[in-house]
Image (cartoon, rainbow, N blue to C red; front, side, top):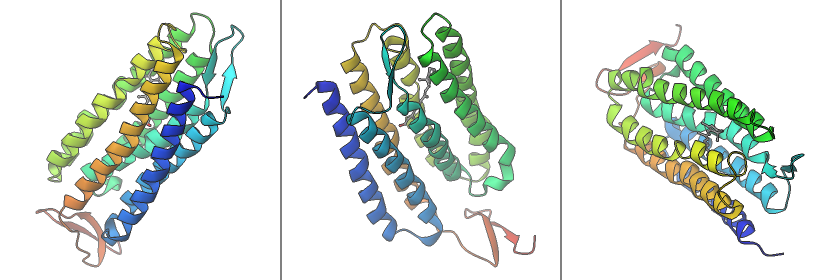
Length: 247
Ligand code: RET
């Protein structure tokens, strides 16, 4: 049976599928050292495509004991794709993630915590869901603080601040809307009709994965070419540092 919410889900599925094909063809012309960026972007939209396929055909949702239904599949998608989106952004800000492994692992861990606590909140039928919502929001603040604090400083040190900041602004504007969609939608106060919630999430997901994907790949393309000098490249900018292969 046709439903407007269903049409949004099919639209999302198609958008992610087409984006995967586009990223693949773009990767063919990419510099070898940049190919992993294209691979990450492709993986992200393929996971989303699977998630929207499941939702379109009526899977990955659960009806709670109070009669409300939520798509738990979304959270599985986000638990996989948000760390990849962050990893993509971080590797535009800094060429050698190994320099700041603790910060990057911390960022990814806090991000996954944010999604899991959001899911537990969504599955809770009583007011306890707002406790989980608060935990998730605190984790979200930590994600933004790490992106705008230590990682931005590292991007500056590696001469990549401008590209990094442009993408971090786009990411922040999009991501900040998720807790609002949650709070007004079926998981939270339930004042936003489901069809609007579905449309909002779909537009956000497409912007956060497809539009952000194209913007990141454009930024990657504009970075100065890396040079191999017998070791792992740490930075390709003016202050080139190359770690000897034996190190
Ligand atoms: C939840 C639960 C309520 C509190 C917060 C949340 C944040 C979610 C975010 C999701 C980002 C998803 C993306 C998907 C890409 O397609 C889990 C809704 C803070 C930030 C970028």
